[in-house]
Every structure is written in structure tokens, then in C-alpha cells.
Image 1 (cartoon, rainbow, N blue to C red):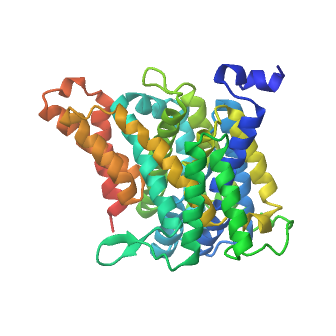
Image 2: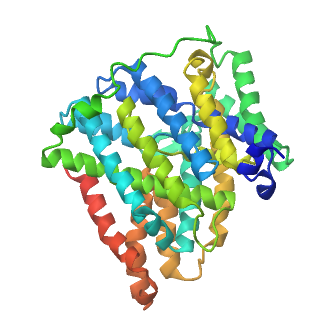
Image 3: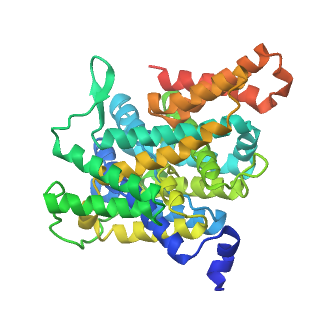
Length: 436
């Protein structure tokens, strides 16, 4: 056995190089869209899209390396969706804050993030969440990413009359999602190793052959310069001097805090890492993502966090940090092969996200549905995540309700003091996010 396999505990985890590399590829393919989406979103804030592309790749790679080598988890990181939209559309465009100052806000939030991680506050909070609610978080994330897949694949669309509705099957790209979903489902049922990854490859090939996915005009291109964004956050820290800016900083902190906490718990449940309702090495995992967020702000991108798409790699067998390392290496290569990444369209990744949602939803059976004081907050978490399109908002709904139902059931003494603290924190959190 090699030193690398010993360090990552391949034998103990029942994995090997082939499985870990396949999982790393699968995770990267599932989340590679962020290389293109993030520059588009932050570009709306007048940031240089080329620099953001490179910053996204480097920050993602660093987070993956830290998560893989330090925490030894198959969990990838990248600039988080949702909070990047808050950065561009709410902070910069809505509040009139310059992108330079907003980036400084991310840096300050990152410093606070690192400090509360060092003092183990994040770890204490995660450990205090009851096991039933952790299973609900995992299942809720499953429904959330399945909903993302259904929407991106064109199977579920916006509808003015019913909020959402079935997509149009007269759209050719929707059929590409259907083909990918059928192929992946059949492979999964037949227990073919690497079924999700094979399904994505087959979907991409079908798309290229039918012309639904344009053939890339090139393969290799130079990575854009970081100069327009690198270090800008450091030179604008002095502008964090108003109540409005501290609200922005607090929003960056809270959303990333609870999004990452929920994602880590959900993925750890999926992979079977949880022991006695605790996540081993959670402190190292939290330090990895907070450090990546800090580095990302200096490079020039919005907050970095753990990615739910890591569940795709876990589903094909990824169990060690080597999976995250492979994903990080691919992010580095992705800077130079951006034309090739264009082949990975929404329709290619949609079937994988839907199937992974099925796998994560299996955690629903672990919840004690016979006791309403547990069932009600668990249900709010499960349905809240996809319906609010936010992991943190879904968690907020359930964790606010949990102390209320437990007190109503005369079980208030069983509630951890931190859960009572979270009750008030989440109420404040919801108010901050909705303050005009």
C-alpha cells in the first residue's frame, strides 16, 4: 500500500484510486458550471469577468485541496451560488456599494469566519443539532439539488398560474435531459460502477451527435489575468465603516455559515461519516472552507463554501479526501481548458443531480415521524430548502420551529441551550435578509 493510500485511509474506507479518481471527475463535472456562472453573476457588478474566472478556479482548487488533505473529506468547495447573487445584485447594484468595497466586506466576513472556527463555535453549533434534524437537512438538500436538476434540465419551469409546472417537451434540449435521466437510472438500478459519471458522458455524447450541444471551437486557452481583482479587497477595508456595510458583512457571514454547515452535515450523512451524531474532523473541514473563503476574497471572488454537488462524487463511491484533491486538480486544469468545459451543459449535469437527490432523500426514513414535535420542524427543513431555493432559509424555518414544538410537547428540557440560541439567531437572520 502506498503512502498516499495510507494517508487517505483507502483500506479502512473500502475505496481505491480508480473509485476516488472517478468520484473526483464526477464531482468536478457536476460543479464545473460555476467557472462560467460566477463570472457572469459578478460581471453584473462591473467586475472583470476574466479575472473572476481565474479567481473562481484558484479559490475552488485551494478549498478542495484543503478539504481533501487537511480534513480528508470527499467534499469540494467553490464560490457559492445565491450569495454571489446577493453580492452583485443586492450589495453592489441594489445598495450602490462599489464591487471593491463589497469584496472588502467578504474579506472582513472571512476573518470573522476564521476566528469563530478557531474558537470552535461552528463545531459546537453543528454538534448541538439533533440527529433527526440532521437527517432532515440531508434529505432537504437532496430535494433541493433534485429541484435544481429538474429546473436546469427543462423538466420543471416557472408558471405564473401555478408557480412551477412541467416543462415543454417540444424543446429538444429537454429530451436530452430525459435521455440522460433514463440512461443514468437504468445504470443505477443495474448497479453499474460509476453509473452517474457514465450517464453524464453518454448525455454529452448524445448532445454533440444531435447538435444540441455545440462542438467546442478549441480545447486549450490561456488563463485570464488576475490583476483587475487580486488584492483589491485589502485596499478597501477602510470603507467598511457604515451600518449598511456591516449589514452586508453580517449577511455574507450568516448565509455562508449556515449554508456550509447544512451542506457538510448533509454530505457527511450521505457518505456515512457521522458517528454518535457528530461529524469527525469537522473542525478541520470548517477551517478548510473558511480559509478558502478568505483566500477567495483576496483573489477576487464572492464567498467560497462546500458544494452540494459533491454528493455526485460520493454517490459513485468517493469516500476519502483524495476525491477532493482530484477535483481541485481539475479546477486548475479547467483554467486552461475552458472551451472544452462548455460541453458540460445544464442538460448534462441535470440527470446526475436528480439521481443524487433520490439517494439523499433516503435519509427521510431515519426521521422519527411519529412524534410531531420532531416531524414538524423536520418537514419544514425538508420542503423549505427546495421551495425557498436556499439551504440556509430551509434550515432557518425548521430550527426556529424546533424549540417551539418541543416546548409544546413538554420536552423543552431536552433541547440543547444552543438550539434556543439558534432560535433567536435565525429570527434575526431572517429579518436581516428581508430588511429593505
